[in-house]
Image 1 (cartoon, rainbow, N blue to C red):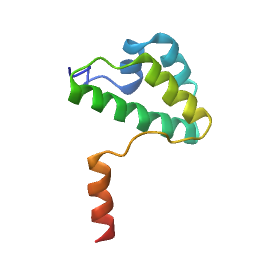
Image 2 (image 1 turned 180 degrees about the vertical axis):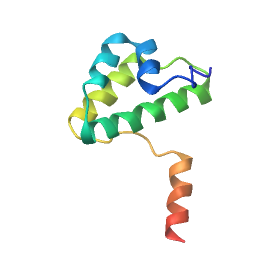
Image 3 (image 1 turned 120 degrees about the vertical axis):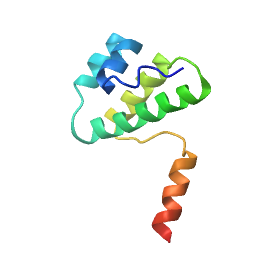
Image 4 (image 1 turned 90 degrees about the vertical axis):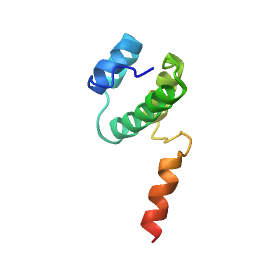
Length: 87
């Protein structure tokens, strides 16, 4: 479903849910980095499965980022980059 890939991340989140977009805009530092990575992973997964992004997933990613937790599944891209680092 290519969910507006041409838009900046904050605009993409705004199209998902304005409340989560406002929460995301207030993040900074490590919490912003964690949330950005988690939301991008979620959006890529939604694109691959051709489904709409889930508001509750975005909310949970932001909540976890605020608590300093990186909670998301490892992707095949992660394993390939780990293999390259080990070589």
